[in-house]
Image (cartoon, rainbow, N blue to C red):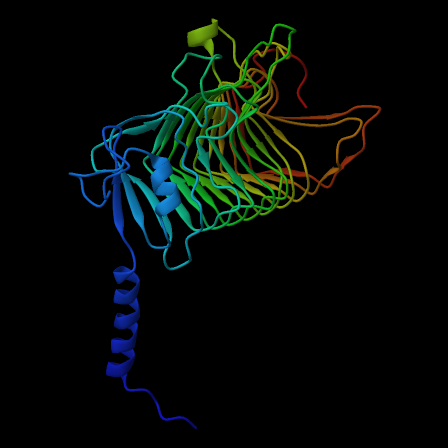
Length: 366
């Protein structure tokens, strides 16, 4: 048996490791008024571009972005951080750095974390500048095969692509928290169709957390959830466009599907008339073994929640809708529709919910 290591020796070893990490980390600064020829290691001599930071940062490093606009200059780290030494892009204290486009061709997201791990983006904003729907930004951010990364405390507005933010390609254990996201897509493309989801979770994304955000004005949905074991918690969903399109205009708040995802403690309100759907529900619940609980679902154009199956849709089964509060919705709290050409709906449970002041549009109770 090996002799026990003295506690003082163990403490010395841990401290040595900690300070070794600190010794190999660095802090850098970027400003729209800087110069990439500078050392970038002080406020007095910052770099000019985020691109310089992307190429330079190593695990444990932090770059502070000073206030101002960064055009055609995305966050796209050239390498990953590590579990004990993430790479951090942080708004300098009291400043508001704003990315106004992703790339000159307009296709790249402003924050691109594809194939990266352990990246933290904190307090960085994205603004497409031009009023909807002619934004300079196509996509705000993308998690694609991204793991253990965080985007937090940002303000994102005006994107004209099919998604503002998305998690795809088996992205897992990421967090998108305490952000405000607004204006994505095209409410009417001229043919009576809409396009654009504010946030998408799909393509095998799993074990991600989306919490404490406000989502507004998505032309098609505010959110579309597939994947599995994702948690959507403590968010506000509000798809009312009346201030820009006129009274009663807007869209559905979200489509919640996939497998074994959790939707809890959210506010789902003010779904409204879309160009291709006059009576939008607050949200759809689809997929299998999902949980919808402890949410406030109110003031929506039609149903609070709709569940519908039609040709080509996956089976909808064993979902649980518990302990929610429904009020002031135009239709029933939960509407279930099985079309003749559809698959099937079975094993779903609606239980212990509070429902009042509903059916503003009339019709029989379900």
